[in-house]
Length: 496
View 1: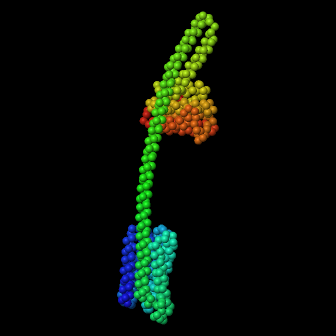
View 2 (view 1 turned 180 degrees about the horizontal axis):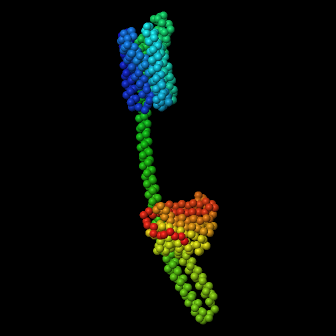
View 3 (view 1 turned 90 degrees about the vertical axis):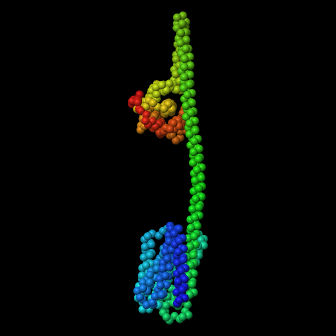
C-alpha cells in the first residue's frame, strides 16, 4: 500500500508540474480559450489526485472528513471531464464558447459528480462496491471524453501536420484505453463481486497495480507534453505572424512614402502646369490688348484719314460738277462698313470698357452689341456685384460670356438667351442659359473658340467652379463661380 501511495504522489507531482507549465504558457496566449480550459481541466485532475492522496491516509470508515474528501474527489474528476470536452470544442470551432455553454457543461459535470457520490453513498456498507461505482462512472466518462479529444486532435493533425497534435492525440487515445480497462474492472466487480479470482486480468486490484499507475503517469505526462508543444507551436506561429506583420508594415510604410513622394511630385507638376496655363492666358490677354489697340489706333486712324480724304474729294468733285459722286458715295459706305467691322473686331479681341469701367458695364455693352448684330434677344441680369474684383476673374468671366453667347448663336437654334451675374453665399456666379436644342455633355468633345474644356480649365486654374447642364431638347446652362468673401457689393440689382 505504501508503494501505491508513493506512485499516486508521483503522479500528483507530475500533474502539478504540467499544470504549472500550462498556466505559465497559456498566460501568454490569453485569447486562446482552449489552453485556458485545458489548464483548468488538469488543475481539476491535480485536485482529484491530491484529494485521493488525502483519502488514502484517512480511516477506511465513512467519517465526515473522508466523506467530504470523497465528494471533492468525485466533483473534481467530473469537472475535468467537462473542461476537457469544452476545451476541445473551442479548439474545433476556433471561437470562445458561449457563457451559456460553459454554464451547461460545468453544471452537467457537477451534477454527474453529485449523482455518482449519492449513489455510492447508498453502498457505504460495502466500501469496495461504493468505490467501484464511483470509479466506473468517472472512468467511463473520462474515457469517452478522451476518445473525443483524440479524434479532434487527429483530425486537426491531418490538415495541419502538427506533431504536437499528433502526440496529444496518441496519448489521449492510450489514456482512454487505460480508463476503459479501469471501467471494465470496476463494472466487473460490481457485477461479479469478490468471486473474481486474484489472477483475473480485470480484477479490481488493477486500479492499484504499480505498472498501471506508472502508465497513468506516463499518459498524463504525454498529454501534458503534447499540450505544451501545442502552446509552443502556437506561440511560434504568433511570433512569426508578428514578424511578418512588421515586415509587411515596413514595406507598406516604404510604399506609402514612395506614393506620398509621387503624389507630391504630381501635385507640384500640376501646380507648375496650372501656373504656366495662367501665365499663358495672361500673355494671351496682353497680346489681345495690343492687337486691339493696334486695330483701333493705327488701322482705325488710317481708315478715318482715308474717309476724310474721300469726303474732301467728293466735295471737290461736286464743286467742279464731275460725274463721280455715286462711286465716291459707294466707296465711303464700304469704308464705313470696314471701319465698323474693325471696331467690332477690336472690341471682341479686347474690351477697353472691361478695364476702364469694370465687369458689369462691359458685359452690358457686349450683350447689347452682340444682340443687335446677331438678332439674338439677350437678357442681362446682375445683382450686388462688387466693383473691385481681381482682374483675372473679370477677364475669365467676360471671355466665358463671349464664348457661351457665340455657341448659342451658332449651335443652339434659340432666339433668346439669359446672362445672369449674381452673388450667392459669398460666391460670384455667372450663368448663361438658353432654351435651344441642347446636347449631351458626355459626348461633346469640345467646341469652337475656347470650347467647354477650355472654359472649365480657365475657371479651375483660378480656383473657381465650372459646370454644364444640358439635355437634348431642353436647352443649356453654363455656370462659372468664384469665392469673393469679404468683398463689398456696390452695384445694385438691375436687368437689361
